[in-house]
Image (cartoon, rainbow, N blue to C red; front, side):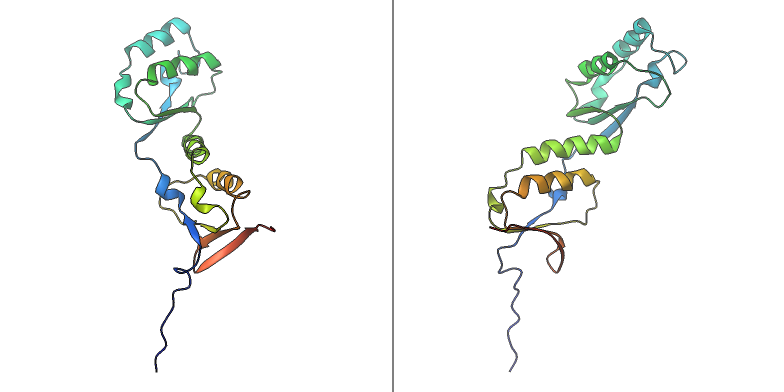
Length: 169
């Protein structure tokens, strides 16, 4: 007599969070400001402003932007701030840094606004395999948000998890 196979995972209270589900659509662009520097090394304010005024900023419509300078120039803070005034009407997010720092900033915003009501007092699995660039810091931020509210936190897949935290209540 065959016995019925019971999917205990499907019948459990386990809740899975996959950060890839929250990955926002939209192109990521890096703008290297060395192109607007004199000899790619010196910021001359008048020339810098002229370059910014002539640049087509509309090409960054709905982009996530990382501003950087790949030369060894010393860039004053106001220069990045000035560029952001041109980008703000078009872009979704602007950071000073590289693509990793951009993704980190994007996910910091996502996680801070994440509604975790469905996970309160439940065991949670944070899914780890992703095809999109989820920054490692996003997982840390997620744990910090969940830990005070959930029963337990595991990492991986339901069939093979690594326990990370168990609430002692």
